[in-house]
Image 1 (tube, rainbow, N blue to C red):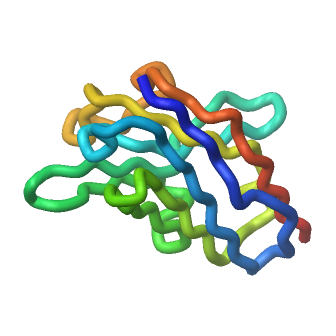
Image 2 (image 1 turned 180 degrees about the horizontal axis):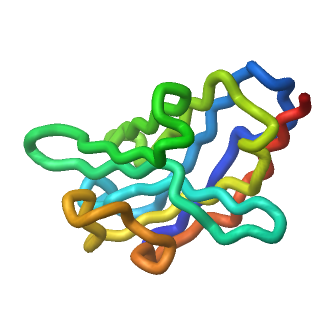
Length: 129
């Protein structure tokens, strides 16, 4: 497992942008599939975006609600994954969590929270109308 620390959450007006960062410990970061999940009060934790890495480069997966607005990326040299969030809406308000696992596949359907073994502490994102 890896240790994950998120940063970058905050309060923003609708239409604004935020960038979340997640720093991971360990020497084998590139082997991990990284995911961003979010959980709003009273709702289940849901995948927002995920990214894997191979010799062919990065592969990404997004939930339909954020396609075209959010971008996930990774910097393997810095052991960091990012989530750039643009055109934010009030319904994006949630606690955002970073997750990692070596054995998640992005080619076998949308990953679920239970597929990931390592989690950060979460960062609050609040979008005001």
